[in-house]
Image 1 (cartoon, rainbow, N blue to C red):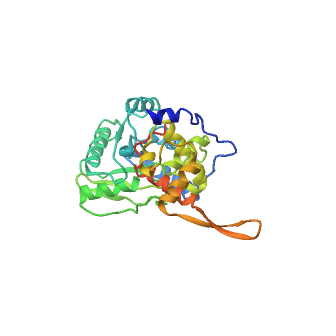
Image 2 (cartoon, rainbow, N blue to C red):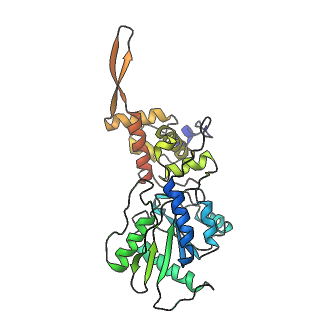
Image 3 (cartoon, rainbow, N blue to C red):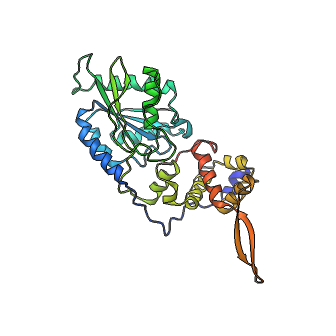
Length: 316
């Protein structure tokens, strides 16, 4: 195909030169992690929610210590935004990381069919756990953990909507860091009596490398400005081209795939009608010229990717 022939001339590696891993571990994360540990003994099962587009990367190592203490179910959310053509390979890798119980769900809205299959899995896991001994009338408590912006609060609200016919109990947002404290128990079911603990999204205080940080930022787990919208947009373009995912060409009305991020962003800005005034010295005096607003275009590029407008993606 013509697009593939053009892409053969593109970058085969991304240049991280001069970029260092951001140390972003806000106080509410450290406080939340400490409280989560203290409450763990009161929890019957741990639900870890993670983004299906980065099934391997970004899972906080400090969560792993919870897995040996309480039964654990890994929920890979946003599967409708993920390219799962290598699903079996992903499952095998996670099994090697001692993930025994795994399920997938669609986007952070948590459709009812996804919620329906999660709770029975939890009950099966608990019934097969030798440490689980409760009478039928005793409360069951589940703790929901994960990195920021993967849909933990949306899961809790979906449980309440399905089993209690009630509305939201926790705030939901597109930016990381909406939930900042370990909340009191939130009832999500009467029969059986089930409570969930919502927790703040917690990243590893020591992200292993720059590439992992860029992956986390692409899915919205790290705030864009901490990485830099221009860096992030360039990395996104690189990843799309490497995977020969050229949907952005049609989506933005480009003639062909492109490996130069400023050209792509300039085209997006012009299409959006977004420009900014820049004062320049013409030699005979200062003049005001209009240039494409590259920052606005970069944010739109990232937003379109996160919403699935550029097609399903796999970053691991």
